[in-house]
Image (cartoon, rainbow, N blue to C red; front, side):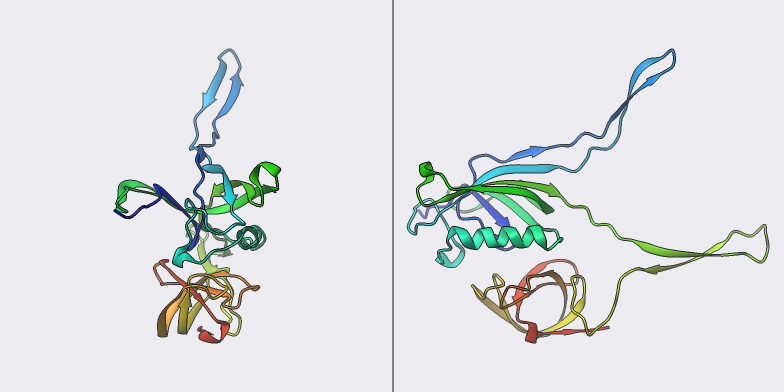
Length: 244
């Protein structure tokens, strides 16, 4: 029987080589306690805040650990993942955080997986003699909730008793000459597992997709999703054409 790790952890499409022994999920509290005159203290209940995840990752610098796994069996040293964390921290964009459990035969455990968009709040990496050449990284993530801004213009009604009409437009640039996160694009080219060209995948032809991540340091800087938000892969800049 083939051996499988019990847990898999992904940052976007990048598999973490060693899944942490423990992942803590903190449910934030937004309840408010106030004092009322002659009534004493009361607790005003509110919806919970954004969930936070915290854990420690081991990043091997030595090839051949039996407990470390890499997609496509391509070894990546610690610096590769540190560069990835720096990108997530500086890009000001959310990314997909996936934590899934597997049975020993490789089958997923039903209804027991985390798959959500998060932000990288902070991380601390340390070199210790206890870890040899490897690196430990303390990670803190926070769930990201989609939001947007809109500009509204209130028009003065001709009849004072009539309700005002509001003209609303989305505050999103739609310049086809500029490729930005959220831009609709036509993709003709090969998909890759990461922005550095690892794991070549299927080839798209005149595909209508959406740019959801940009890594300007990568040779394949644009990550493409389908119109419904499903993740596809990274492509070269020459493979992408903006549309209006």
